[in-house]
Length: 80
Image 1: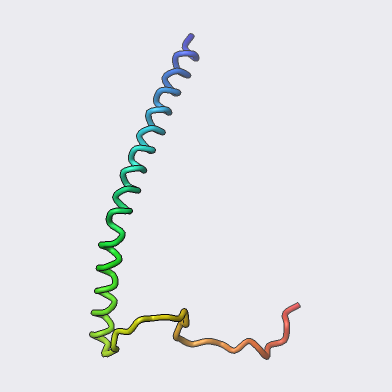
Image 2: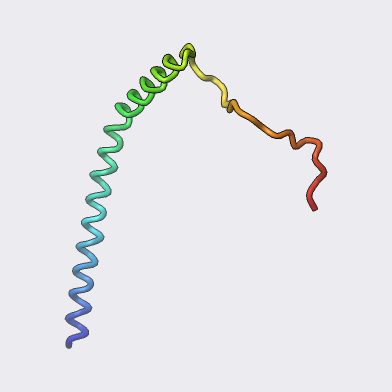
């Protein structure tokens, strides 16, 4: 009888926990969808301000080139 009562209590607590997590996840997801455009706008403004402070002119980025150092590996022998 003790095992049956403990099992029922564990199931009720587990169901409550899963329900609570689902409701919280729903609210957090809705909040993220609402906040996304505001965060995107603020990040774009901060990026343009950082470029101004560095002396660059803000311009639209159309490519995906990453500036930086690189090591040419085209003439390396293949690893075995």
